[in-house]
Image 1 (cartoon, helix red, strand yellow):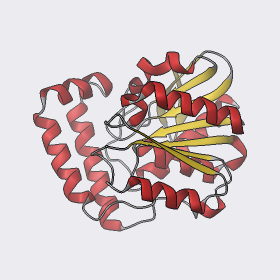
Image 2 (cartoon, one colour):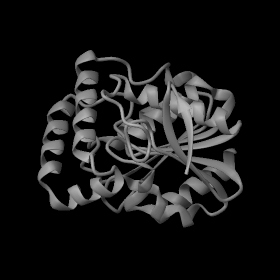
Image 3 (spheres, one colour):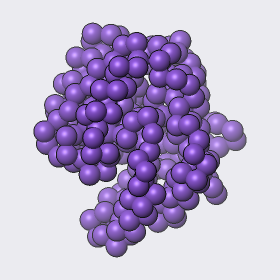
Image 4 (cartoon, helix red, strand yellow):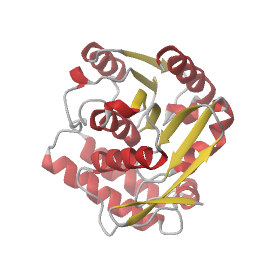
Length: 251
C-alpha cells in the first residue's frame, strides 16, 4: 500500500496501469473502493485512486473541515505533486465533483481536464439541510446501505458519517462559497455528467448544467437515462465512454 503525508497525516493512494493520468475523486461518505469495479472501462489510462483524509485506508480526523471539498482539493494537489504529475485528468463524483473543480482552480498548470459527475452544481439547494438529515438517518437504518458503507469506509463507518454530516451542517450554516473562484476563469475543459433521474441531486439539473456550461470557457454536459447516484456507477459504461471521448478531445 502507498501513502503520502499531508499536514502530518497519512493519505492512501494507488496507481494502476499506464497511459494518461486519470485521477478518481470519491464523494462524501465513500472511498476509492467505489471506483474499483469500473476500472476495466478505463484500461487505457494510468488510473490514480485516493482515499481522502477520514475515509477508507487514510488516517482518520477527529473533525472534518467546514469547507471539506476545498481541503480535499488541497489533498488532491498534494498527491499530484507527490507523484510529479502535471497533466492530470480529474474525475470527481458527487462531493468529489466540487473537489475536482476546486483543484483545477488551485493549480491549473497541473490539470488537463475536469469531469464533474452527479453534483448539485454552483450552490446547494435550499432544502439541502432537510434532505441531508433525512438521507443520513435512513442510511443508519438501512441494511443494504450499512453493508455498503462498511465495505467502502470501514468498521468505523457510523462515526465517519456522523463527522461528515457535522461538516456539511456547518457548511450550510456558514453559507460559504463552494468554489475558490468564479467558474468564468476556470481554465481546464469541464465535462458535467449525471443521471436524468437522480434523487440525490437537484431535480432541475439539466438547467443547472446548462448554466454552468454557459459560464466556463470550455464546457459540455451529458445526462443519462438510467436512474441512480452517482451516474459514473449506475450508468458506468455510458459515462466511461463519454469521459474517454472527452479526454481524447481535450487532453
